[in-house]
Length: 141
Image 1 (tube, rainbow, N blue to C red):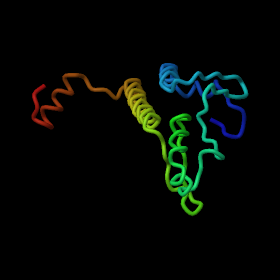
Image 2 (spheres, one colour):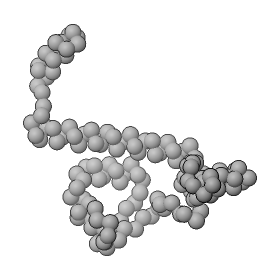
Image 3 (cartoon, rainbow, N blue to C red):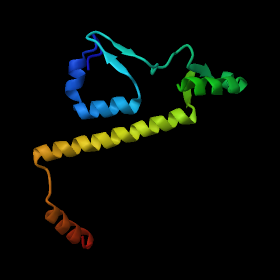
């Protein structure tokens, strides 16, 4: 994807198989609408630098308020020490969603690689696999 110009849906969609696009869109629970020059999100997914970056001392002094913000927005907060970003804090529910999304992305990547292997003829028959397992591991399958 180009970063220097308008968002091009056709280019994006040509790089990801349609089934994966549908899975990603549904798993993110985002209602994504495209037009030729911009993307509109029905849900905020980017960090707000004025609200989401704070000194660790502010977090220590106002922990309850930060916890309420984390739960309400679902967005992480970057905590700084001596002006440098050092920590990221996130509510458990949002973190679990992030873990689930990462796992799904790994699964989709494995499926994509498997399909590419099939198209390229990098496959083994079931009988060939059984012989390999017997020879290498001494396991009868």
